Image (cartoon, rainbow, N blue to C red; front, top):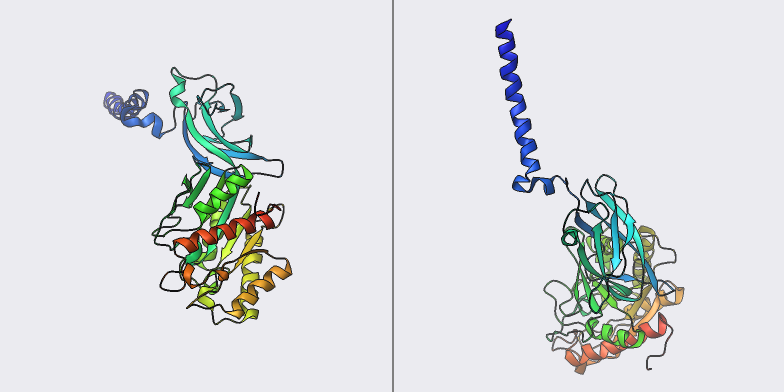
Length: 367
């Protein structure tokens, strides 16, 4: 009997000791265990929106921005505030969400423009709670997705920079998350100079709103490479989903140089399938707008089949007419007689801005 008690006492102590050590490690936050286990009151991560992101505004000039992230188990609420853009003072906090299993989500309506948005845990807060604030800038404005081939991705040897800080570029990581930065070239990995910083500046001047571009164009790609189910198509859909419920104002399509031998019927049929498949994959309140450029210039000439195919898609009402960049001849091209040079890039940017102002925003090209 004594031996049995001794046995249980030894084993009880052996089992209790790791539990006590584990509790002591958590209590004293050894190796950052409290943070690792979310046993605290703090904002751990903000999944959406990304810092500096441009969110598509609605017809009233505002956007209902959804915030998602993770907070510690001890956080009873998550609060949000829009800071003063000049001195970053915080006039007022409001409850955004009540976390569920450390996950939180809530919405905040924001006006056009860029605002510093702060998140923190609500009451009761630990000492020095200000250190637990997550700071990020959220912009409400116009968002465009760029798709197509090299003249859309940017292949000029001159890199361009946006003059306005309201022009932004969104980059999609391998994990599918968007990160945002100033709207300077390159727009894609290993890309060159593009029209988009210049288009952004022209739109900011006319619209007075932040403008964001997410570029998924791929140099040398045929329209066949964008068919539903292909990696290029899946990436396009991934970007649409990553932008959140507000989505984008339009998809800007500049492609055709690789398909110079394609007949009009085939080109129109393939582009129609791509447009319809994106609309089916990402449902929006109104059909997702496409703006299709007329682009076929290659080897110093244009090609009627591609041009007619693009025009037919306009005529069906599936897409809005974009710029006719074929009018930019050899003097606007690099020696390969396909890609824009610096002068051609600037000219193409003016054509794109004029088309967007006319077709999407129903404004004259010139003020």
